[in-house]
Length: 82
Ligand code: HEM
Image (cartoon, rainbow, N blue to C red):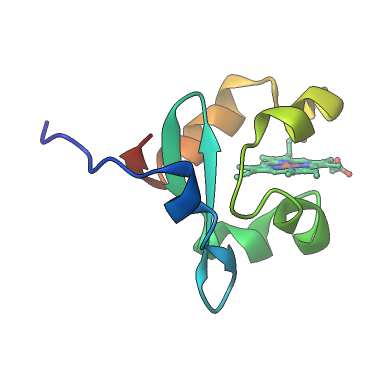
């Protein structure tokens, strides 16, 4: 497939609200999860804690995300790489 654009962590950090769109990173990949925020089974306020940054520290606390079906959801929102 076509290569994804590369973003810096600083650029990702500029996407921290629904108005600016919500981006997160996971294992070197960048995701625009704006359209998933309202669908999150754990609630909007929780998922927004990771807005503009890395998912790893949050997912380390909430092991419910260590499942293939969760990664499959995330994959659908990929927009780039770090
Ligand atoms: C549950 C996806 C970010 C907290 C879930 C579930 C999914 C999901 C699919 C249901 C899993 C299941 O029951 O099989 C995602 C995605 C995220 C994200 C795609 C990021 C793009 C976060 C963050 C937090 C969080 C950052 C915490 C700060 C939770 C909690 C639950 C949950 C507490 C359990 C809800 C319950 O069962 O009552 N998430 N999540 N999530 N998530 Fe997330």
